[in-house]
Image (cartoon, rainbow, N blue to C red; front, side, top):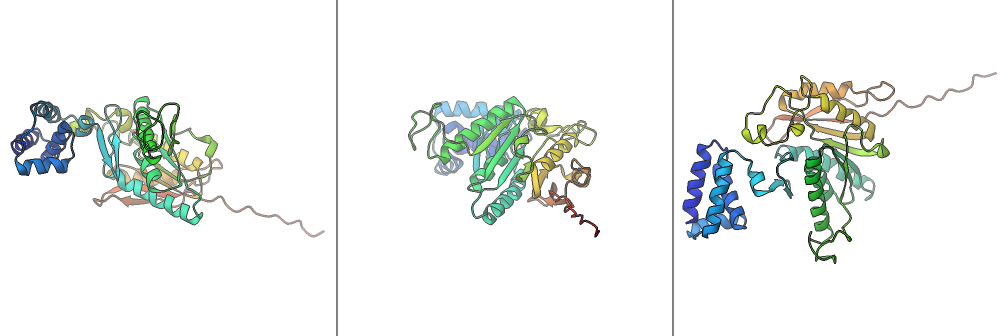
Length: 333
């Protein structure tokens, strides 16, 4: 019976220290059956039997989750805002707290696009990982011109998969066979990508659009090297390159990202970067200390913003405008 299976799985996962045992049990059974969680709940209420092959698959999934393999690695999917993204080993699993970082970028991009009578805002996502933030902006702000940069080859491959899938969906197609709208895509007839994905170092990429970006957003690695995460799902399965920001404060990589943001943004453009809650003051100081090529402060006064749980999790600042040129008049003869 499905209800008994769920009860057994919930107890197994709770004993293993999984934070959300019931929800994870439902998600795993849904994955084993090829249905959504609402259908699993319906089957449990009705007391329906689960096919033997699905039971075996479910038991194997529960064992792996009890060993603290991430739920998203087992299902191959991660929810982010209104999107469902493909994820797995080699890419950082997007977190709910990053959705609020994305919201700041979405709001600014929508505002800029509206002010330009539909001319799309230019948005850059540095250290894109799975492509979560870039794809949220691209799908929520029609007309936005979104660029995303990722250096790691495994993460870039996951981002490419997500960009292609959502680009196909935006074009009314599905990845697979056929090329006509509504039927699918082929390698010879790919849809236009809704995000321009670049494989490269986020600190030096996209020189061709210097000074033109309206928004630069980033969830870079920022964990200090000696601050090993407690949860096995993070410590043992998230890629180290996506976690550790280098330097004693974990902000060595973010400093490079902030310098890149100063280079890419137009005057008045918005920068938003996620950080750990204990880094709020240091992140503001980092942004305030960033200078342009002439040694002037690159940003206006930075501020800290909170996530949905009220924790300080992002620094936000506008690109400073250069001082107005002084016109020197000729002295009277």
